[in-house]
Amino acid sequence: MATSLKCLLRSGKEAAAAPAVGDANRDLAAIQVTVRDALNQALDEELERDERVFLLGEEVAQYDGAYKMGFTGIAVGAAMAGLRPICEFMTFNFSMQAIDQVINSAAKTYYMSAGQQPVPIVFRGPNGASAGVAAQHSQCFAAWYAHCPGLKVVSPWNAEDARGLLKTAIRDDNPVVFLENELMYGVPFEMSEESLSKDFTIPIGKAKIERQGAHITLVSHSRMVGHCLDAAAVLAKEGIDCEVINLRTIRPLDVECIEGSVMKTNHLVTVEGGWPQFGVGAEICARVMEGSAFNYLDAPVTRVTGVDIPMPYAKILEDNSVPQIKDIIFSVKKTLGV
Image (tube, rainbow, N blue to C red; front, side):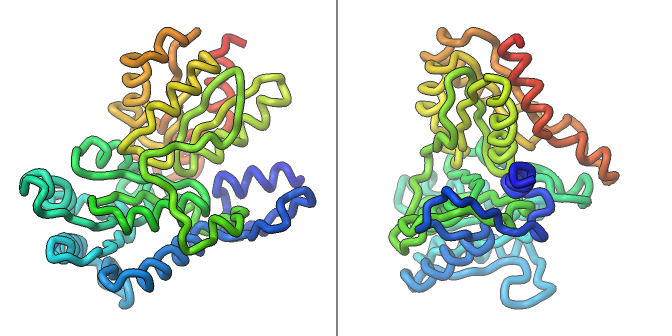
């Protein structure tokens, strides 16, 4: 019972109603913090630390304020004027209405001004599939924005990621796309006293090995990291030792961490909620093939992705359109030939 509950919490399934999980062996100094609270703590502390930081966006402070292009343009102009805006999208699906401002105004200005005009701005909001919101509100934009030079793209999984990476993103002089997951907001994670410090930050561009392993590497980001850890727990009972990497950042990608793990395990599976074509997993495959880790592979890299269709509305079809734990287990066994 306890194990299955931990799996639900880690993956974000029915997160809002799930209770915190107790563990008699955990660090007594650790505190349970939801991803939502970790984000709010980071925002509150950065607003207090730097008077140039401010929030704006859809339904920030006032209900019924969904004007995507206007907020984004105001935020970009404010950043150019020396402020450090945090522009919130109700969902990143709505950012498509403002993508010209994000790409052509925010991402390219520093380069086009020969380094004279930085644009310190954070675009944040829910990304990827939620639940029951169908085709137009279920897309993962990690690969979309990571394709564009001039942007940094961050995709946190747990409360520590959310808190540390958001503080770093706000302090960065470059435009940062901060991709959250709606299903993870209510999920509690243990956080140490160190990670709750006002000085705690996580560097952009550095992945984290969440679980050490020897037989195969699983690389993922956002909610799918929890799925990978749950799959690894199941596979461990069958004698398969998985190493799980939490990317944390999509651009710049921590290729060094991935290559180091592949050189140890000799096998690689990438897991993401987005579509397969030109996705994050496809980029990882290309980097591994082009780099020094390629000669260490004992089998082709396997990708686990969302299905290459618009998201269906029906729940049973929705569940079969995004990666599940069983899909990761199947791909691991296929890659290892067991």
